[in-house]
Image (tube, helix red, strand yellow):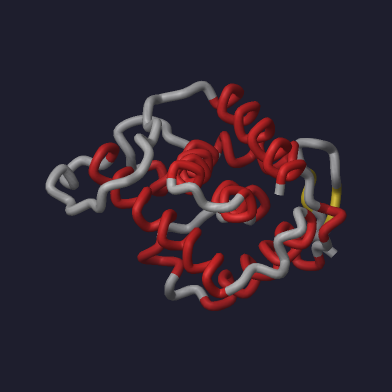
Length: 179
């Protein structure tokens, strides 16, 4: 059995994870330290920041607290298995299976294991639309990328990872209570 150690001190086999292994503290910490785009951005912009922007876009659209929470957590598996850029990930079927198992544990932990097809469609839509804005803003050679208008203004400023982790955790705790 291969064991991983997390920021909060948990130890478990990520290949045999369960919802009790999931820690909001671990999610907030790790996602605030993971750079989007495989690090090929003009400056450090974390998966945590992206997730916060997705959640705020759902809120600006007036979508439910459940949708806001899943938008915040949609990349949470990356806290345990990192990320692989989309053009490569599509070729890694085994990665998708592992990612899906871990996301199932995370969604179960936060009472989102019964998402409808429409709810899944909504968070995916926001993820894609925010991604287009991120590319246009943060990647050289993407200034002419077509984008759809958003209901919010994503904060893509360079931020301290500690601040991102704290904001992620605070937003998640509030949404968990309210959903």
